[in-house]
Structure formats: structure tokens, C-alpha cells
Image (tube, rainbow, N blue to C red; front, top):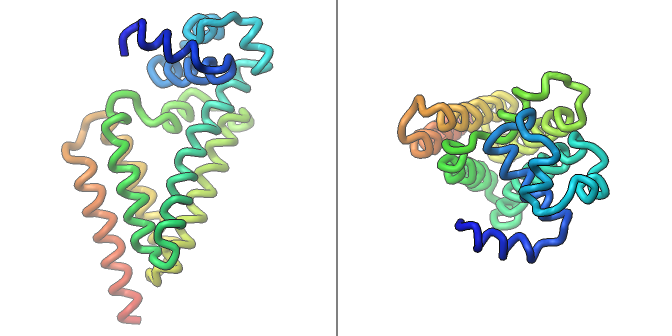
Length: 202
């Protein structure tokens, strides 16, 4: 996006959204620690005073940014549940496809959760707790889907799929594996088929 186009888009956003938009761009590109409040205010075409009116601290801004990112993943679960309420297998594959389709962006910017965890070693940090709570909720929902799909050992099935999804994101980020999205889908399908066959045998 050229400068004129960005300025036009930014001018249409309310101040709080401009700040969040700027924070998302800078945190994703440069990392949380490297980006100061002044840089965010400058990018949002506002002032530090205005930023602090909306976010009491930088930590509060980081937390809200990650809350929005987490909401995008939760919304993907919700959309799949609404579209395929009686087909948990399709929901699981849809979640894998959602992750696979986002790998190209992760390859350039990295996974915001992985990047943020690396920069937030204090487990009491509110943004760190938000990530952990979000991941735990995802694991619970995925385990429930595995159980509804009749997979043998739904806890283990959910763990296997989680390892694949998160491992694919890391591999896309560091460029160690090619065709990550296609391989991700094949592995998740293999897990579903293998554990479905075990369930049938039992």
C-alpha cells in the first residue's frame, strides 16, 4: 500500500482503531520489545497523550492486540461450527485449512502468539495469560470435536492435531519445510483416518 493510500485509509478510522492498526503492524514486523509507544503514535498519526487516553500502558495495548488476534481464531471455530453443526470431522479439517491458508502470511511475519510468547517470559503478564487461556480453550474445543467425531483417544487425537497445526506454523515461519500447507492437510487427514479406524475396530 502506498503512502497516500494508507493515509487515506488511516484518516477514516477512529483514533482507537488507528492505534491498534499501527500496533499490529509494528508488533508483527519488529516485535513487541523493539517498538516504543512513540513509534506507534507516529504510525497511527496521533500523539502519545491520545494513545494513553485509550490504553493506560503499552502492556494494555499489547494485550488488546492479542485479544483481537485470538478472536479471529475463535471466530474460525465458530464459523465452522455454524456451517457444519453435525459434522465434526469437517470442522476439524476446516480448522486445519484455516491454518494452512494463513501460512503464507506467517512465513513473512511469523505467528503473533509464538513471537509474543518469546518476548513475554513472565507468565504473570496479562498478554501472556491471555495467550495461554486462548490456547487452552482451543485445545478444549478441538478435544470435544475429536470426541464427537468418534476418534479413539480424543485427548491424544487433539494433541496430535495441535502439534501438527502449531508445528506447521513454526516451519512456515523458519522456512525449514516446503509445501507446508499441503503436508499439514495430509497429516491431519491421516490422524483422523487412523483414529477413526481404531474406533471402528474397538
